[in-house]
Image (cartoon, rainbow, N blue to C red; front, side):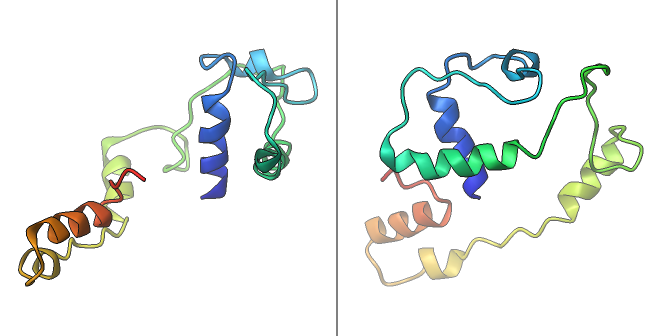
Length: 121
């Protein structure tokens, strides 16, 4: 998910983290503010993010509205929420491979942390 990573990186250096869309929409283009200049290695990610953001524009004559994308009419329901969760595949945790191996406990613990992407590196 490069767009998600780019958003998180840009959000970390955003000047106004609680800004509304109206605060960063300059009548025809997006204009968020940042607390520092971008580094050379960040420019490609920034360019890709703003390239995707450029595809979206604001219709100023309408009000903001929340829309639930899981239903055709845009309204939230518990049933639609449950259906959206139930339709996602969740890979089962490989208990037997991790915890019943002949590896050291610390190696098993490392494998367990790696499986859940919780290793701080």
